[in-house]
Image (cartoon, rainbow, N blue to C red; front, side, top):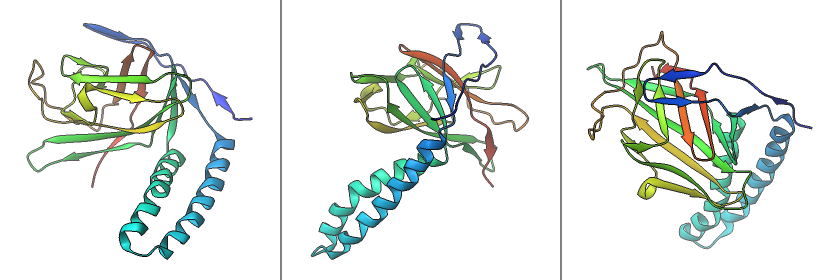
Length: 208
């Protein structure tokens, strides 16, 4: 049976918003074993693809297998956070700082619908309407760009999707605050979805 550790975080209060912590951090020892077994099978399944008649057919054969491998290997190196029906997988992040002291953080996570029989929508349509923010304990940063098509990301039951949100230069629309990286600060991702809220520690480091 998987060992489940519930970690409570200190309540974060800021001027116009409040994010109550409402998620579980899960250590999945049994799941890691299952992932390793599944990866062994997938890598074996790649081998017959090389017998296809041409490179196009090889790519078609390999694509779904490599996509599943990518997801499983990301899960292997990630910490897991359950927020309502969605399980988020986060594997740490690096901040790139330019010579001009411009900081950019590309947040990459997996979001998996593990708890709903319906499609669950993740929402981030613009600076004034996004449920995902970067927080340093004082400033709540708004994203610079995301991979949310039309402002929403629908996740079917059992489906897993990558979430990419870039924090960097302010994008306007009321957000003129550029993301500034200070290695002495602790950064978190604030999630405030209709199905649950969370404050996920990001443990950022500067890319060398």
